[in-house]
Image 1 (cartoon, rainbow, N blue to C red):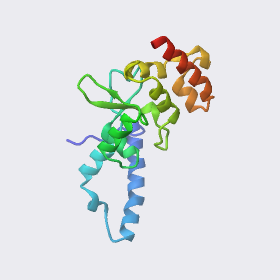
Image 2: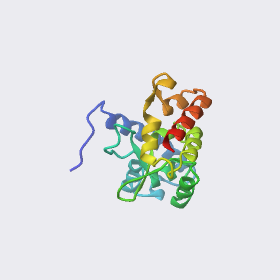
Image 3: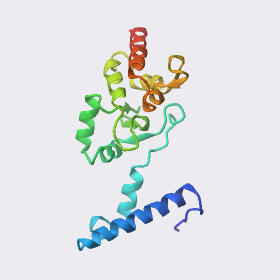
Length: 178
């Protein structure tokens, strides 16, 4: 049984936007003698689209939603899982390992255009897992700080706040963590 989104609900509005964009994309494909069927069945395409939606987690309230490794690969321009793992090791993307051994990526580190907020990577490089585990760091990044006017490090950096202030705050956190 197929369910249909309630009019004006978020799924309904998303479905309408996706339909509009797919219609335009279908017209572009037709100009080259191709169709959307050439890239997969409707079920496969829907699964690929939904795979990019952050998955719910018990940590959502504290840290926010998370992307999977495959979603991050798509967001970062279609890079492979191995390339995502390499970026994770180099701290150019922030990842957390679950108790099941899976890697999840907080959505807070991505700008709307899919780029990663670089200041967060430099903080992560400074506060390595030897010093602070990733979950603790994620909590610190999303907690409100008096030195930042009551906003989180993530909010501060996203809004264009002085990264030097965040660097100083990270230095203090590093010293307290030793």
